[in-house]
Length: 271
Image (cartoon, rainbow, N blue to C red; front, side, top):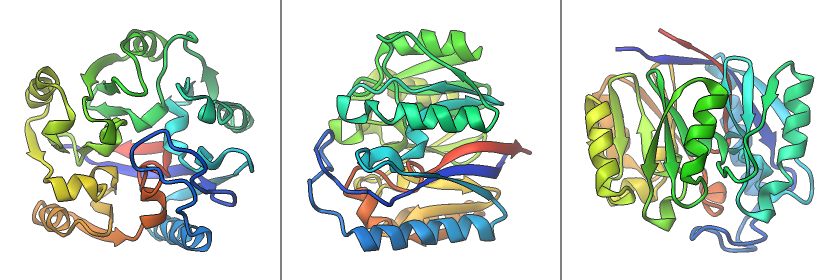
């Protein structure tokens, strides 16, 4: 069994974060407490630093409220980043400042064809030597072959069927190289069978866990950062031998995201 130790992440200071539009079922315009959101974000950053994770920060642009969700900005493999092609016009402006940041920090930036929609690690999650890709709401099936060619990796498309779980990181969580959690109802029957085939130990989220954004957790070393309100998931994580730390991410849940969405992993060690 292999675990992951995150060494460096990119986050975006939520200076202009708000829900200004609705492009997923969680979003209610005007619902965010801005001060509370900043406090919750700072707590997340403090925990990363205490865990020995180097934190890089990009400043948010005023007209891009969802720019805070750094995981969505691209798929990183070594020092290459395949920049996202956002489906919704509301998010397409995020690409430019992130491309600039990656270039300034010595990443090789790659682009997929314009008709291949996908939103970074929000829906693309590494599993062993493969990449799982949630398709149906933000990513299209054409993206799977484009990503595979650009990054030189086998991509397994998984059909998402519930609009509440529009990204893979809202309904799938990989704990280590043997164990993952998923919400069966979020996937087509064939995609459920595919996950059961490729994941040796696959646990199902309860409805309360998945709507509490348990899937949007982050694991580094043997520490799992979890949104508050998922007590049964927290217990299960501890039973599996991991330290569970709960963080209140309520203001970001109002936009359909949580800890994983706020975190772009730049480098990690697999051991």
